[in-house]
Amino acid sequence: MIRLALAGCNGGIGGSGRQTTCYLLNDTVLIDAGTGLGTLSLEAMARIDHVVLTHAHLDHIACLPLLVDSVAALREAPLQVWALPEVIGLLRAHIFNNQIWPDFTVIPDAAHPFLQLKPMPGDGITLAGLHFTALPALHGIPACGYCVSQGDTTLAFSGDTSDCAGFWEAVLALPALTAVVVECSYPSAMAAMADLSMHMHAGALSERLRALPPTVASIVIHRKPGLEDRIAAELSAALADRDLRLPQPGALYQFG
Ligand SMILES: [Zn+2]
Ligand SMILES: [Zn+2]
Image (tube, rainbow, N blue to C red; front, top):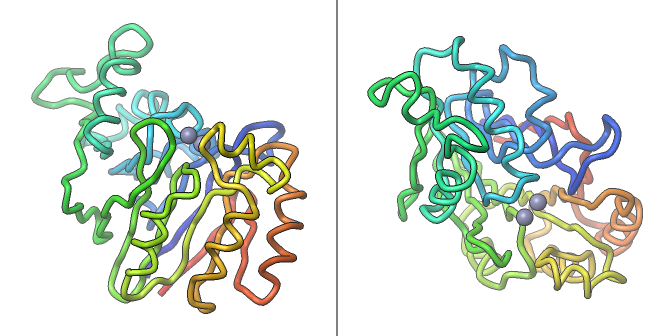
């Protein structure tokens, strides 16, 4: 069984109802560390053993530096952060560099650090019983999605991406897909902006979701602030006969 709690699932901030990307899986594994992370209790944050990142844009890592610092005194083992090797390099160079934030990979000492930054192996990794493999994404910087599987349950996360044929081919090839958690930042009337920023728009996403088996749940996230209703209306009209979900932060799903 996979319990998926969407602490943050918006494409920006504004009021307590908008929090950026942060998904908690089975209480101990996090996908992305956007502002939604700050809505978790300190105890819930301290239980997180692994953070798996899709990319290093701020809306997906904003609360990672603060998480490490907040829970350091409460944890025995280091917090482990997994991402593409290029993303790990960006975190080392630009965040945990002793200028923007301390290098917690050597604090309090290199043998017993608060934080470990770990490149995701090419064939994936199993974390707390959940198997992660990277999926293709097209976002203009090093970025990926993830397939997360446990037993008969398989979830596919797009991360941030433009309309990436490789992602959808990989998703369609998965033997038992339960749900896709996929971004849609703009309505189709703003397709030019979606292309410029390398995000999905509702028109392209509708076509992709329609090609999936009808039993697959579609959880649409990363709607940009102020555009939520337009995107929801467009997707709902195009996918009326599908299992379409348009969550708010705090949404909780259970699969398997
Ligand atoms: Zn991004
Ligand atoms: Zn984003």
